[in-house]
Image 1 (cartoon, one colour):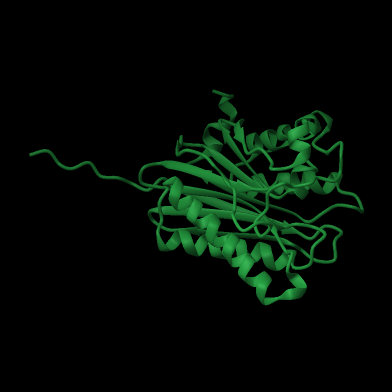
Image 2: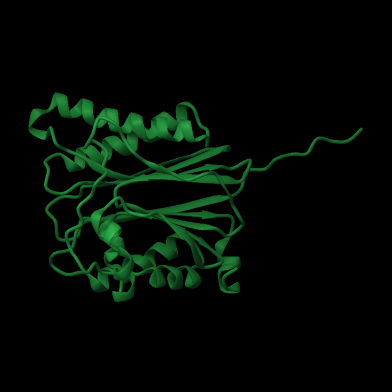
Length: 263
């Protein structure tokens, strides 16, 4: 009689930071849930110019996490349900607090099934997810912004990571409309050593993709990777800098494969 094949949860490690920059408060929010079967990681940024951004981002993170934990699945309908719940929660709080009736937030999230070794992600706005394999970028999310549509965001990477146009008008954000329009990826098969970086625009405005890659190639842990990224961001910051935050997620042991070069 053949013994049934056993499944083992892929190792996951994570690290995070959130800096207020030169602002009076921090409108960025970070949260994650990790258990033996599933992982859910969320970063959100209150949209500037409207009161209540800090509250909106916190609501977005907590609601999405709670919704996923209640019914964990990588199915697109389930991921959309998490985004919708976060959007609805912000809208409900807008109706409750009239002085914050226009608060909204960006949203980026990563969902991992540790048994099937798959991941998918969703985003609204210009908070980003970067996916690295063997120290090289595989994919990043595309901002829901006018500058991304115009090609300015892509051009910014050729200029050290800073935007050519400092104001980035969003055409999607949680709390901005009755219906949340998220971009959701199909489930992707993970490889040992994959690394993800979820961050707000305050960070990716300061550092380039190349800095992220080089820092990953030098790091022995998720904590070291973020420490290098944070140091690079701080070295370029000026008096007008925004809040900047990041959440790193390592699958398996990236430090064992990042120096092997891109696939």
